[in-house]
Length: 125
Image 1 (cartoon, helix red, strand yellow):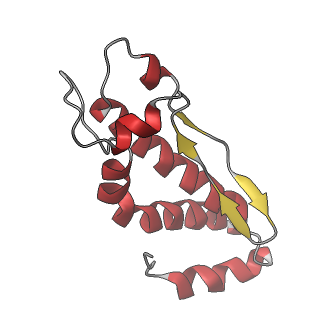
Image 2 (cartoon, rainbow, N blue to C red):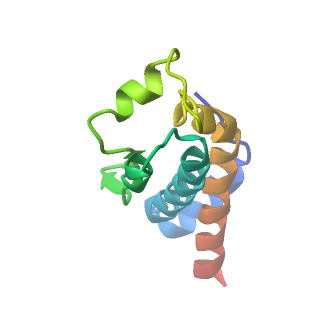
């Protein structure tokens, strides 16, 4: 689990919005996921690029007070390619999705914070 700094400042300004910052959280998470997916594409194994073409970041889904952004690849062999460390590829590697996720994880909170503060700034000008 990662923590986000500056939450109190954001919460105080969010009071002006009656706490409705979920759209900005969704935008930030979606932006971050797209950047992560772009890194994943460059690390994905390929022969025909078929799997890379199926890599997708879904739009944010909102439920009560949470936001979910899902991303992944949609081929029958993507999971096996991702997990199998013994496969050898002329280009790419195993863990082509989790590695970029873990590398970029520290920037998730700041990316979301930036979107929330931008939204608050737009609404409080």
